[in-house]
Length: 95
Image 1: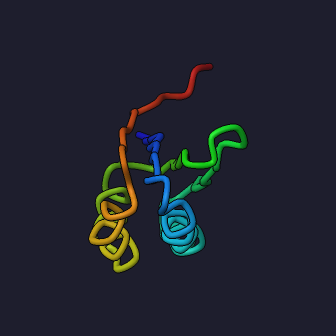
Image 2: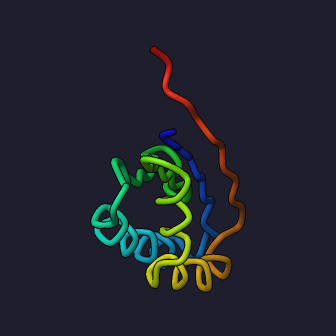
């Protein structure tokens, strides 16, 4: 079953560029992973401290493998120092 997640990051005011740079490192590496059908990161125009990641994986096994990848582990070990808040939502496609 396909899995889609939305993850929102709010950067600390003095760490916007650092968080942006870190998130950018995730894009190509994640898109190249088996089972990744969508991996996009957006920065809100009106709120430049806010970033939204939308990712879709073919199934839970591929998402679990993503969580074990080197680039994910680097992000996981680093993001908190740049982040004021983070929350996520699981989503499903309608229709």
